[in-house]
Amino acid sequence: MKILIANDSKIPAIKYGGTERVMWGLGKCLSDMGHEVTFLVAAGSSCPFASIIEWDKSKDLNSLIPEDIDVVHLNFQPITPIIKPYIATFHGNLNHVFEFDLNTVFISGNQASRYHGSTFVYNGLDWSNYEKPDLNNHQNKRDYFHFLGDASWKVKNVKGAIAITKQAHEKLAVLGGHRLNFNMGFRFTPDLHVSFKGMVDDAKKRQYLQHSKGLIFPVLWHEPFGLAIIESLFYGCPAFGSAYGSLPELIVKEVGVTSNSYQELINELKNVNRFSNSICHEYAADNFNSMVMTNKYIALYEKVLNGETIHQQKPYFTKDDIIPVKRLPMNP
Image 1 (spheres, rainbow, N blue to C red):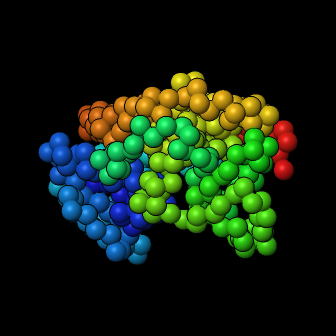
Image 2 (cartoon, one colour):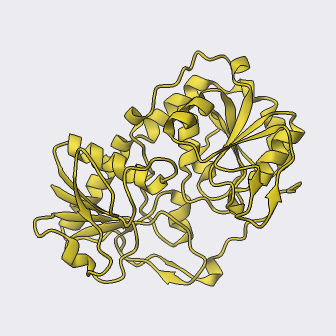
């Protein structure tokens, strides 16, 4: 097949870039399987295994799609009808009334159900781009927990992660934030048990996760998926998070805990040694790799190529569908 993967963003991802990492892994797998891959992405992108078409916002999307493309994989909701067979992966959340395209694919079961959809494909990453972790690193050599995400985004709840580790008498490394933050107004974090590492690249991320006891992820929104979770698990870090969105799907009992009680999460941190670094790694490597994801997407490509739609009825969201996210007990 000749496949176009489209999103108005730059590849490859250097630091954050969640959607871009997923697209990259998908394209690499498709290419390795013998498919011809083209990326329609932002200026400045590069890729050794696929062709690049630069996104031109002044042009109609259909005019940017080469005539010989068999199927288009959008990573956004189309505004105008797409001439070629296509699917559209939805990576985010909504807080306004919306009707989705019939060919929408969600990224977790929870996300799909919240938008009255049924079809989802879990994100996967190309683990060959990640250095294999040292899983013989005994727990006493992992001497802090970590938070991974944009700390300036309130729904990611770095304040909660700070409070949990403080009361558990544990150190916390914040990957994705600074002690002095002007993005949320003036905010200074005085807690000395917390170290701030800023936005880290892959090499630094690997270094920090190799020595972490676990991920603290008490999000205050319905997380659509959570790449921070699977990246942390890959490096042998059990995950401790709230029970919102996809988290209960991803964080099974063998690799972590989900709870909307701060006290329960604090107590579980004290028992972190009951989790196996190897089991956490194997779970992420086996279930959330780009090959598993790619095979599921290929089945959907074939479906639309046969003239079928992904959903029989359009997924949708109304104000009545809002599921409240409550502040966790003891939330600072």
